[in-house]
Length: 311
Image 1 (cartoon, rainbow, N blue to C red):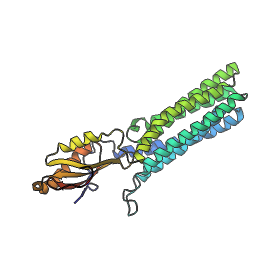
Image 2 (cartoon, one colour; image 1 turned 180 degrees about the horizontal axis):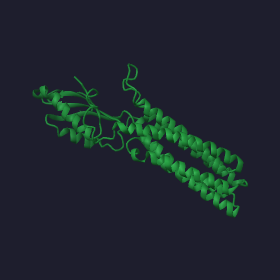
Image 3 (cartoon, rainbow, N blue to C red; image 1 turned 90 degrees about the horizontal axis):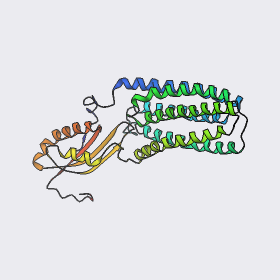
């Protein structure tokens, strides 16, 4: 007798949620623009880096390439959430969004390692670099990255992948700024080791931002309760519903980076069984306000002996 809310859940109660349809087109466009602009910039950076011999330009190109991959993955995951479920994947492919946000964070951490390694090597053997070219190319980078970050800014708190994309781009704008400063200093002082120092500072900045992304996505990957949810608070809210005596076996987890689910056993008085449907719809309504849009409840009677461990 478990009640599934997958059928009518999507029609009402979404006014105050972050699931409006126009956002999808807007986000889709943001991802595509981000991919196009950043791919173009990677090509410019590689050419300029090879001509000028600047490691920070080439490193930044590698980092921007990982961004393009990250954006493409996030876009793919985003598309997959729209695909319906089938007999092999009864939840559809929503969870791919969680996998992608995890991969994204891993890619970032890996790119930081490479940057740091290269920078240390170059620090010991500085090379002659054309500061002016480096600075000009990176100025273009600031513009492209800042613009792409701006595309994601208004949706960044609704989805881990959008947040990941936003963080990547915002970091990259900071990275490019560092490279501009390095280029200017090198141009005037001929202190070529500055190139390496900037690369290392970049690495630290990126690592700080990535760490939380890695932690959040790993938590969802392990079916943990999403960070902004509080199980005690959810249970307290459900217990307020008329007819609910107690709640056991409550599980809360993320289906994707934007959707959450809950299952629970509801203890009700045997005389209230005929009210089970209305109790359920009351609970669903309360859950939607808590940003949980998929719920399954099983009735348990107050006079039943429960032999499960957490009773």
